[in-house]
Image 1 (tube, rainbow, N blue to C red):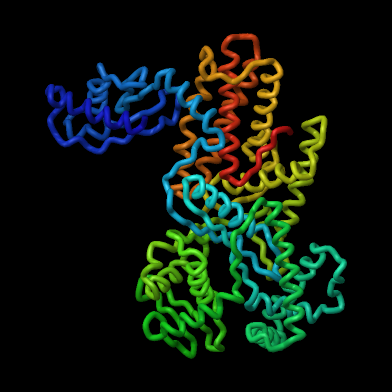
Image 2 (image 1 turned 120 degrees about the vertical axis):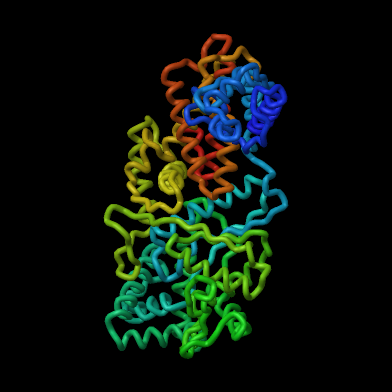
Length: 570
C-alpha cells in the first residue's frame, strides 16, 4: 500500500500538471511514511513541503489541490493537513490484514528479502578461566536477536562463538591456580564452585602481574609454555580449567536459549593467523622494533602489533586467523562480529588488513557494536575481581521473577517458566534501546509486569491465550469475516506496521524498533481489554476474538525475534 500510494500521488500530480493546475516541472522524490499519530491516518506524505520550491507555491496550497478529487483503491479518505496529505485505508484493508495474520501465523512478518544469502553471526565470546560477567550478556542477547532477524528474512544463518582459551589471561589464571593450589576444587564440587575458584585465581594473577615483577615474569613464562604445550603438569591444570569453563558456559547458553552451530578457539586461530601475517610481511605487514605491525595510519586508521617482539601472536593476528577459519567453515556473504563499541576502531584496522590480504573480504566483514551493561555501582572489572557474573545476575532475576509471579497469581510457575520470565527481563532491557547506548540495569524494573518490560509482554500474550480459551469454551471462534467491531480499529491500525518494523530492524540491525513496537501494541491491547468485553453474545464478538488472536500472533513472532519465549499461562 505504501508504494501504491506513492505511485498514485505521482500519477495524480502529473495529471494535474497536464491540466495546468500545477506547474509543469520535474517532480521531486516523494516519501510516504506512517504518521506519528495514527489518529491522523494510516499513511502520510509531506508532498507539500517537498514540492513547494519546484511548483513555486506554498505547501498548503499544493496539498489542497492534490487532495481534491484524489481516489486510490483501498483508501477511504484523502485529507490535506498543512503541507501533509494523510490517507486513511478502507475497512476492507483491515479485514485483509487480519485474515493474513491468522492464516500465516508464525510466518507473519517473514520475508524473502535475503533469500539465498548466507550470514555468519559471531557473538558472546567469553574467555575460559575468567568469569562470564554481565558484559557478556550484551553480545549474547544482541547477537542472538540479530541472527533471528536475518533468519526471518530468509537468510541461511550460522551462529558461532569465539572463545579465548589461550593468552595472557589464561597464564594469569594458571599462575593464580598454582599459587592457590591448596584450595583446588574437588571433582565432586559443583561447577559453579569450580568456576568461582577460577575467577578468583584469575583476579589474583592479574593483580600479581601488575604489582609483582617476579610474578610478572613467571606469568609471561607460563603464557609461552601454554602456547608451546611444553609443560605436562601445567597443561593438565590448563585442560581441567578449560573444561570447567566451557561446561559452565554451556549452562548459561542453555538458560539464555542460545544454540551455536560452531565454536572457534584462540588455540586454533593463533597458528593460522601467525602464518598469514608472516606470509604477508613486506606486503601488508612490516617489522618495527622487533615486532610485526600493520601501519593503519597509511589508511587513516592507527598502527597495531600483530606479532610481538617476543614472537607471541596478539589478538590482532588471531582475528586474522579467525577470519580464515570462518571462511573455511562457511564462506558466507556476510560475516558479523558483535562486540563492545569501544572495539570499533580495532575492527576497522582488522578489516582493512584483511582486505589487503585478500580482496574477497572487502564488504564481507561487519562489526555490530554495543554499549556497556552496568549496574548502579558502575563499570566492572574482572581484573580486580569487582565483577558481577552473568549467572548471579540471572539468579537474582529468577528470584525476583518467582516472587512477582507468586504475588501476581494463585499458582507458582515451574522453574522453566520462571527462567523464561527472568531471561525476558534481562533481554528486553538490552534490546529495547539503541544498541550503542549504555544500559544501567535495574532488575526490579526489568522484571516488572506493569512496566515497559519483557515480562509485561509475556503477561499480555498469556492474557490473550486466556481470552482465546474462554472464547473457545463459549463457542465463539475467531472470524475475520464476522461483523466488524468498530472499537478494535486502534489495535488493527498497528497490525500492518509489524512487517515494516521487522524489516527496519533488520536493515538497521536495530532490534529496538520491533521491541518498542511490541510495547505499543501491548499497551493498546491492554487498554482495550480493560474497557471492553471481548467474549460476549454480541455478533461482533467473533471479530474481536480474531483481533485478540492476531495480537497474540504478532507478540509471539516479535518476542521470538528478540530471543524471548512466550508463555501460554502466567
